[in-house]
View 1: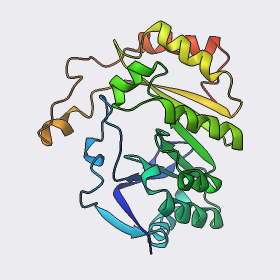
View 2 (view 1 turned 120 degrees about the vertical axis):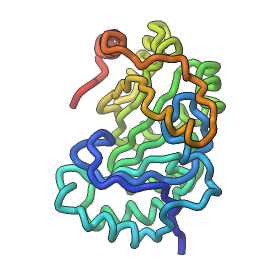
View 3 (view 1 turned 135 degrees about the vertical axis):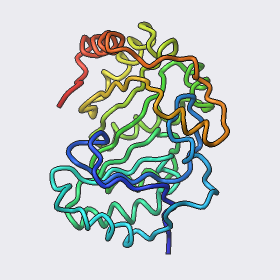
View 4 (view 1 turned 90 degrees about the vertical axis):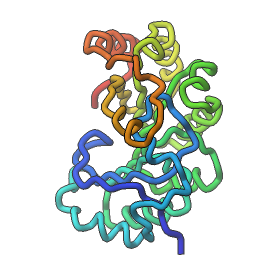
Amino acid sequence: MIKGRIHSLESFGTVDGPGIRFVIFMQGCPLRCLYCHNPDTWDVNVEPAYLMTAQELLEEVLKYKRFILNGGVTVTGGEPLLQSAFLKEFFKLCREEGIHTALDTSGSITSTSAFEMLEYVDLVLLDIKAIEPELHKHLTKAKIDKPLAFLNHLQEIGKDTWIRHVVVPDLTDDKEQLEKLAHYLTQFSIIKKVELLPYHIMGVSKYEEMGMEYALKDTKALSSEQLAVAEGIFSDKGLPLKI
């Protein structure tokens, strides 16, 4: 019986999909994003806080079902696609209970198992780190090919998608980069919302606690004025920033 390796659980999440949501953080991630605020989820081999079957995880969710009726369940990470077989079982159980499901992913895994699991996902929150290949490699230590292939697959199967993009000063807040990304996204009819997330420094303390150097320690949080400029670029392209 497959057991999920789970880093942590959040009972009342309000920023990872529509409504109030039960949020599940999976353990393990193949990316090494410079601004990641969950470096403690990277190591797939570390002993997880929870080792649960899909049914056991559902039973935990059902304790809060009445609170998430206008929301649902969101699985994030780490990178959930590393545990696609487990999530297929879990999302299927959620659907049987009438619980809305969302998957927050970088799209960095394009396996058959990952694509099969999408059948039971109601909404995908796809993190696009950067549209320029070299910048994407610099930010994540991985190529951009798979995230773009993942987005293409979502279009092919007609899966509702929210795009998430972290706007980082001196990296992804460049006007040319933002316009290029916005233009690229206009071809996808599945995109129901674009979330431009302002870079923040709330995760720096985790790096200190883990004895790790934080690569962007000299980067300041994105200002509201910088965020407004980015939002204007996407809005001008007709991309939905609100639903």
